[in-house]
Length: 151
Image (cartoon, rainbow, N blue to C red; front, top):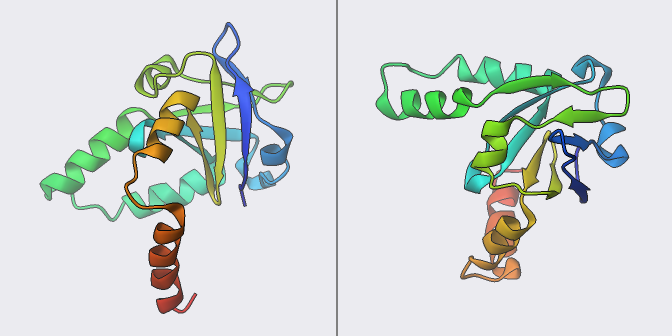
């Protein structure tokens, strides 16, 4: 499971080194490959290939005759890009996604259990600060939902 965060830098060729804390939890089934797509709140979502395969199976249940589901599928799948880690554990970040997430040089890589997110640090801080409720209030609400589901 991906957890924690790491600060990394985009090199001149738009590559990022995948931090070892995240590399070591990738399963052999991922075959050293990552899948990128547009995330929520202007971040980039990063899936190991094996997790992406599970996501795709879920997407197969979407109804193409439902306008909201069709819109989501188009927006979500439009930016999908698969790449393999090179011998230095770097991956190439696609230019469309760099532009979408407004990434300049530095990035925050955030572990989100089965996937990772890549953020521009300024946008991440802005996102963190825009919530009217405190972390403690949000934590109380969401943990009550989790606990009520019997998890």
